[in-house]
Amino acid sequence: MTYSIEVKNVSKKFDDFVAVDNISFTVTEGEIFAFLGPNGAGKTTSIKMLTTLLEPTSGSVILNGFNVALESDQTRKSFGIVFQDPSLDNDLTAYENMEFHAVLYGVPSSVYKPRIVELLNLVELWDRKDDLVKDFSGGMKRRLEIARGLLHHPRVLFLDEPTLGLDPQTRNKIWEYISNLNKKEHLTVFFTTHYMEEADRVAQRVAIIDHGKIIASGTPIQLKEKTKSATLEDAFLALTGTDIRADNSASMDGMRIRNKLWNK
Image (cartoon, rainbow, N blue to C red; front, side):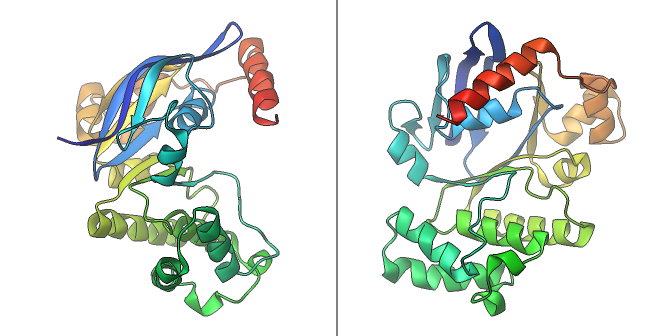
C-alpha cells in the first residue's frame, strides 16, 4: 500500500497553547479523505503543517515521499491547494489567472497551454476564459480555483471548505468534477468541510479532530456504526458534543500568535 500522506506524532504549540496534540494518520494514494472537526479543533493548523506553511513543533509529515519540513520546495510542487478564502486575482481574466499560476510553478508553455484548455473545459469555464474574474459569481470563482490547483498535475489536492456558501447545484457539480478527477488521474483528495452530508457521500475515509487530537477515524459507515447513528452528522455530534464552541482565552492567544506568524 502506498501512502500519499503520513503524519506521525505531530504536535504544534504556540507558546503554551497546544493547537495540535500528537496526531498520527495516513492517507492512501488515490483516496478521498475528509478531515473534520468543530471550529478551533486544529484543522487549519494541521493543514498548514501538511502544506509547508507551518513547521511542526514535533513529529514528522511525509507528503508524496517528501519530508515536508526538510524538502519543502519538492513538497509544494507535488500538491495543489484550494484555500477557504478566495485567492484569485480579480483584475485578471480566468485564463490569465491560470497562466500566472503555471509560470509560478515553472510549467512549460507546451504543457500548460493544453492543460488550461482541458481544465477550463472540465469546470465549464472555457467560454468565460477572457472575462475578468471580478465579474464571476462565487461558484465560478471556486470552480476556477479548483482548475488552477490542478494545473501543475499535483498528486494530492487539498480543499479547505471548497463549497462553503455555494448553492446545492454548484456544490454537487464541484464534487462531480473532483470525483471524476480522482478516478481519471488517481488524484488523492484531502478536504475539510462543515457539510457532513458531503463527507458522508464523497469521502472514502474520515478523521475527526477535536481539541487538537484525533478522536475517531474510519469510513463513514464505521463511524455511524460506532456511534449508533443514522447519519455522519449525528455521529460527529455524538463524538464532539452539541455545545456551540466559544473562543476561550487560550485559543484566542493561539490565534493572535498564529496571525503574527502568518503575517511575517
